Length: 94
Image (cartoon, rainbow, N blue to C red; front, top):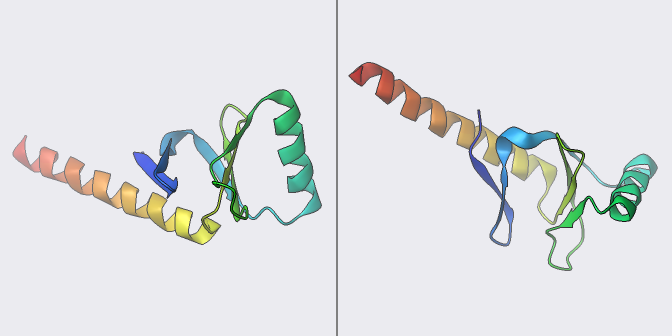
């Protein structure tokens, strides 16, 4: 369970829809990016900066980010823990 995750430059994604966060340097991922562009499923959130992470959604959309994969993963974990804390507070009240 994840909320909205900041992927840089004010762009956010629905964390629950992301299935992978990967480094874009390998040839297969470069092909994946090109295929998504041809299919109209590429979302470029880099604002012209170097792509440092590729996020793959459950709908096969490919999202490009200028933020490192490790940083995005940390934001996912932070979001998860914040939601868990809120749920725990609700459970205690009930």
